[in-house]
Image (cartoon, rainbow, N blue to C red; front, side, top):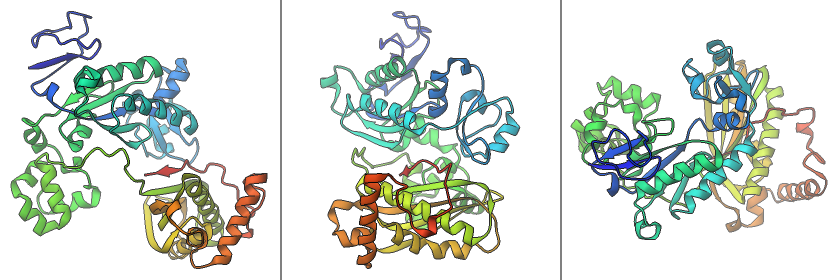
Length: 429
């Protein structure tokens, strides 16, 4: 049995209750501990932990990060979670469950800075770092032992200690032989966790787990599997790849591989972003199309501005709506060519909004560009105006004015009279 003290890096005897070097009881024990190289690091309750770090008086109280009035929970601390609060919960429900919670508006610039610092620490150890979001990433430590003079497990434990010491936040780590299992492992021992899933126990561990643990199994797929009498991963493994592929197509093959603990995806530091979006929770529910349309336009302008800043262009567009009863709707369309133009984005998504604005009231509206490509590879006409060169020239002229005098220096008529006070942060996925 391999061992590792997470607090000092020593390797105690397998039967030691505490580390003889530092006295810590946080000892990891696993037969394959020093032979695994794929890791997933996940910051613990990231936004809430940063806020508690910066406001020590909140250390022992429930904290919720999110919109104060009509928004949703962006993150919450572990104390709040004991009351049933969770991410994406409507704020009024969260405060009903935990009325004593302190609610803090998100500070995305601060969170992004901490996220970049954590990522830099990872990249100090291996170039194979694949970010998944602001607060989590995969890492591949294969072949780094000679350079770092430590195995992956020891390096990861030292990384967790460094993050905690220098940034005053905590992380949880999952270690395995592929990405799928590493990500599962990182959630097994939160917070300040370090969990391992090896080859020997992977299938037996997965067998009793719900199918919802598998990537790609959302509510609709889970219900479809349940109708076929499948609720556990082990039941998928018993059916086998051929039967699952015949029944469910390509996703069936992926389910069969996952059920066996197989995942051949590599850790890719250059993982391409697939979408960029912006959304807003409205101050009040709105049903009227003529009131939703100018909001949609301003969101299209925001997405276009962020595309240009990121050097990206979108080949498709998505509309997101949330009804007054919290039902989420998404509608997507492909574009004739990649674009950064707010006009192109708006005119392609406006009919989707018109089709859904049938009298229902909406509490949230969002727009996203998807199928992202590098803007440098496109000609200027396609980039801005698509098939409308005049529209492209107008966009360029407006960009020039805004660059000199500020983003509000010039606006189009359809956006007059609308101010998006609580527009959500940019989401790049």
